[in-house]
Length: 202
Length: 175
Image 1 (cartoon, one colour):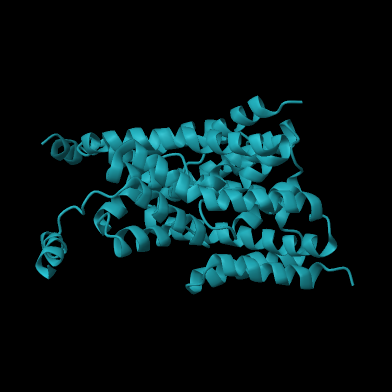
Image 2 (image 1 turned 60 degrees about the vertical axis):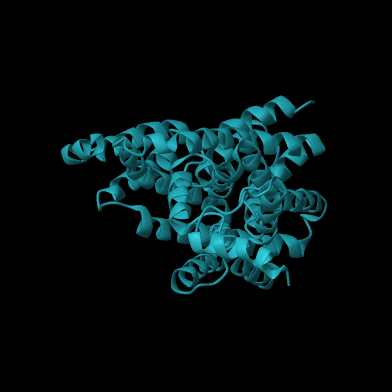
């Protein structure tokens, strides 16, 4: 009896093979838990859950998916849900994952919205919100710094950062035009070099 | 007046601007929701966004509140679908095709090129928000304090936001 029950798990561990197919329900539940508990940023919770706890994807896959998520429009959290869901169970997996990760926060902010609409002008709430808004500015700045440390590939990239900020905040070109103009410029600047082109076609 | 079509248009459009994070779309979010459609005021937008930083899950869930204000439950639902639908579809298509692009030399160029632009957009969004959120010594001190703490220590940002709410009450409660 014990042999029959023990063996499969031992084998799958030893082989490091893809885990037995994950069910749509499991995907939904796991992302729902992440969606409900990921206070202060989703990425570490995603890694902890999907790579460490469940072993649904490897750490290498996680990093790869995260870099795809970051260069696409859309939030990292939801893009990751789509990519991981797709890998595990195709389109249905993606849908289960994105609904799961969005649901708790959406319900919470729905209620917060109603509450704020009714009580938002109470003195102590206005006072607290001034502190909260200032903290959010500091939080975004820290994201800017950590992203700059991680994902820039040369000093010249700071020129593109500056151009983007000037285009949006000073010239009021709007985000879409800025994105296309500076984006194209930056992509051309980082165009494939000769060697890369050759190794790429090999 | 039925706001549903406008909500769909605005949030589907904003969705495609969120390169590098939700904050990238913030300047446009402000123009469309505050100035064009007047669904809420700038201080309200800043408040909702900031409170949203304490909520778990994807950090732009404050859009649900905007949808709810403009169009009730249906408005909230429509905003969610419009904001997450287009990018979700795009991510799905890319997920399917990415393996084929692995050898495409421009893939790296696009990733390397978009990195500084998305950081710039984030910063631009941050400046737009700071114009409404930073006034006077107290708020500047809170912002700088949070920045320095996050750069120096591994603290959960949600806790810092919560702590700043307390600081806000202490600093801004009428005596």
